[in-house]
Image (cartoon, rainbow, N blue to C red; front, side, top):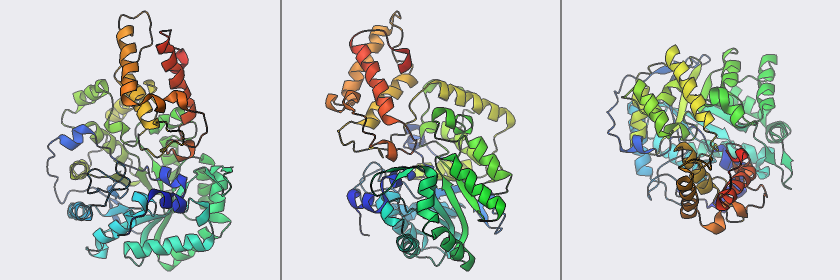
Length: 479
């Protein structure tokens, strides 16, 4: 398998592709990795019916974006790692044997290696045992031409070793971008250049009519104008969407837009699709792992309701409960996570009205923490000025989650908390890589899948830290 180094990968797919790979993924939360996982049954997987084709699709979808590497963990932790094809084969075999039949990949995943690895693993099984979803990931201006994008689709068929794709997505519809000269583009401007001006969408519709694409849809990120426009086209009969991939979890249900104005609440996205009978494919059920690593007091609150369930199970049950959800994607690096997720959906125990209300309370608890919505995906790295952005955010969020962020100088705990914050920051991040060295260039912003205004947050942390160093009152804005 030919490897693509990071520099060549960025040239082909563009920086936005890095952000777009942050889909529906489990992180290595300690509870799920170390707990003894009960073997799930083989014949109990909850299936959902595609209203267009009648296909029975597993509620759990296998996201092929965090594949294991021989160095341990995934390519996310080891971007130059070697794909562990043997382990991928074992996990795919196990998934299929337990009813999982939807596999989601992209030319942009795993440094460009995901489609090859997915094709090798799935080609060993009868074609009618699985559905393949891949994407037109033409993020870079170099791929916006018709011929380049057409070649990308043809290459996907070749690498996946298939004659047709079951589900093809316009990847990252609504994501802002930059043109070849570095000029910022809105989500609508980028969509127009990637899919409309070059005639590509019309060509994809032709492939759909020929049977090379059985279901045509898009994954939505960012600019709600694009989402609304594409659904208006659907209503007008201009284009027909067989499915749409959206971010949905119990925190984003009502708080996505409040956490980040450039995101859209899942309740709006799902309801708009549902009333048109367009199936939803769900990404980020764990919000990049944040909902599998909630603060201890929230864990205790959830455990008091269902002691046998881990916090990730709550999130997956919520994501799978809406009836128009076709499948819920999870990027599974470890066999333990695969087994745990299969068990949750074999069969699904839908969230009750009372449990839904409880999860809305939990969502408010998490939102009220005011943490920075960083998933530590490292897509913002490397910073051209050497700042360790993920580690800075990680330490700041950790102190908030543990209730140790110093904010009241009159408190008996203030001196102890102040020292813990400053010493902890120095231990976590070398001083030359801390927030005070950010110049606000914005290089990181376009790569962030959570649309965080990273320079602004770094400035807030810098002000907060400097106040602590001067032993002064902490600014309210920093809380």
